[in-house]
Length: 246
Image (cartoon, rainbow, N blue to C red; front, side, top):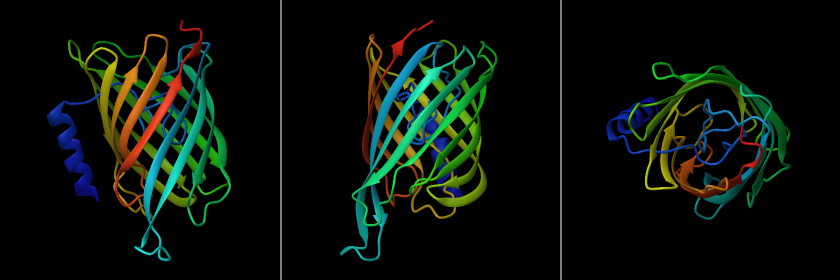
């Protein structure tokens, strides 16, 4: 519901309790938070393979209690082509679902139009295409990223055009946002959300705790719903940065 999204927005910016990006990818591929993309670009010459796992509590009429627990597995590889261009490939599979089908496979690209300055947010545009399977996905997005000076807080916001999501046509423009907070050394926390679209069973949102290491590894623990689940569920992600860090 829209009022739920407004409430989440107020909570995010009022609380200032949030974090650095989760692993390299979002559920559908492009580098970002757990469910939404951001304006962060993979460094030139760097590969970032990562995998996210998210459980779902999905309404299913033939299940004994009316719901079925399934698991999403999303794997991607980002590559920094230049200081402004990131490309990648992704595969998304649903397991344990009664009607589980083939994996959805595709790719994405993100381009940084404006770099971040003290007074201006970074601005990036991108697109994702995943074909086949249950999670067929077509989306274009514009994302902004701004670190609040002299603070551990970074904000993310933007708008996406969701043409097709999880095999369902949406044809919908939707805003999204996220707030990050750098915690103790190597730990961070993030919160993000967007409005619920037609055909989705629950409110898309995520609260994610991230552990990063100087060697480029990241592990994320999340309580999230990307839309198909009726309620947020537990999940995790792992990723690593390989190659140049110029």
